[in-house]
Length: 239
Image (cartoon, rainbow, N blue to C red; front, top):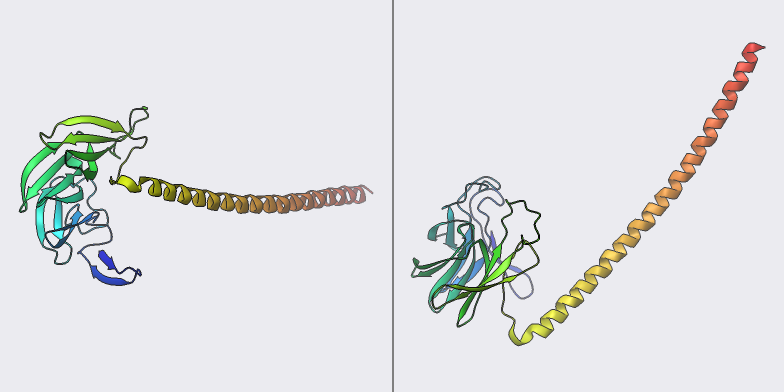
């Protein structure tokens, strides 16, 4: 489902699609020509029924009405409105698509799983991830950002990112310092919480260890008592 919230995080709208949970795999949203668009892997009915069957099944729909506006895609993700056009990451096919009036007018190969998109007057910045279906231990098996010239669609350069996947790319401009500070503060708080949880876990382990030691001591004492009783019983039998 696509859910709308007001600034106070109160739900104000909900638009559901047929099928079980995570059957259509709704992901990215975009406002375009007054319509709220949602990208999905396809009209599947079963939970994760899209696994291995997504080529050509992907769609972009009007989230409010369910109308199919674009189809024939393969695991579509990020969408951006651009000067009257709609730019879409056709992820599984490894390409960037440009639509005008719901018709594809441009197709740019990016060389990998395309997801995450930022646009400037001169460039497309496209996130290119490593497929989850590929197992690799080589050091160069990392994601990158493809810097593509809008003028001719050529990849001018790539920027390596030390992770396997990229979900989105955003331009931050002059707010970069504030954003980085916020991320650092969030990371510090997260680290504090993790350390606190580790301390509680360690205390619990120490407590359990003490209880186990006490029970082990009691068991050893009982074992000695049983051994002494058996020895005493043996002497009585002999007598």
